[in-house]
Length: 519
Image (tube, rainbow, N blue to C red; front, side, top):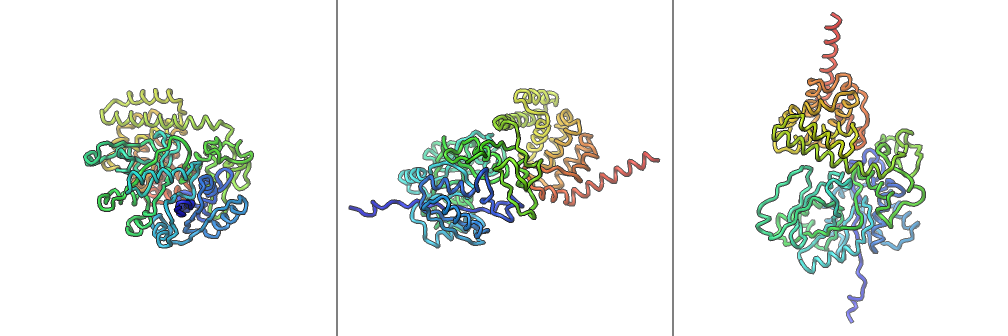
């Protein structure tokens, strides 16, 4: 009898504890994964899913906050009484996946296929079954070194609110990745040679990337041999570029059922909180009275406190003394109604985007585009303030997604769209919707859209009498906080040279106007 065959396979998991700038300033004083999500720290959800999956050994890799994470793990094992072998590895060099994989290889602790997962992942997947799927892939394709797990969701689903979720992949008939792109653009270029090399290709933009992967023991040495591999995306692109040399492939498992998502942004924090409260992650569900809570946009502001306060605001009680009453008040509105509106906003935005895009291409008169937008507004029952915001964002995103120079394209789009904008931006309230939508657009795309671009857009609308002078000055001196951005981002924008010079010019123009009136 073969004794080796009788031995139980050891299931292992590698958990990455990321440093996440999206949760600054809180993450500066406490690890994000130990922030409470509804009724427990994020990391506990990850470990709960691994426990549910009968994982035997968990290796945590962290680059900061070793003592805090060690204390949490010690407390967890003592309270939950799980017989898990959890080891914590710490190094300031663990800034990305690359150093972790290379260190993992040097330690020689990986015995077979293992799970690669982030410490902010919430889900109810049976990952031991995913390991079996990965083994099946290896039987069919000995070159398979990784199986990435995706969930099937429609493109505008709220789960895909994070920029990390804008993923397009192309698969061959064996579900191997032949193209992998993360992009915010609406159009994608697909090399024609893919069709020459593959008789059958399926292209997907309807998948949510759980960022969970089942890896073979060949993955760590691949990273060790290639120091260009720093992230999973680098790894995938590297294997695709040298596929004939390395002969290593990455397969995809697409799930129709089950839940898994990362808390990798403030928006994801809100959406996953809702999913937990609606028990989409069963059998991992909140305990106690927390299930009666509805979370609205204002609660997210609790996450954006000054780092000096040293507090981690937990959203598991109806009253929270750490935030002021305005920002901790839970909504009385139905959570379901908000979710349905979210999908309708997305559908409405897509129609506005398409209408304006077609209007620009076909030089359609603005009145016809306004009629289309109004028709869509009534069809989706979108509130006026959202219409104002989404119309502005559609005009600006069209310029960002074009192949031309952003400055010239946005100027051209604004000139064409001016009658459309003037139709919706009239009152002080609508002007507020407009200017904060412009600011949010710039902050979301600050690598491509500079503060100078922002000022040129605002100046154009000011000169065309869309935005009033007093409103712009109030926007500068008394800004309201944007839910998806920390206050420091808004402060940095207002401290930029370009914004300062524009405000100075605006104030001087006002003084000259006042002097002329006095004369």
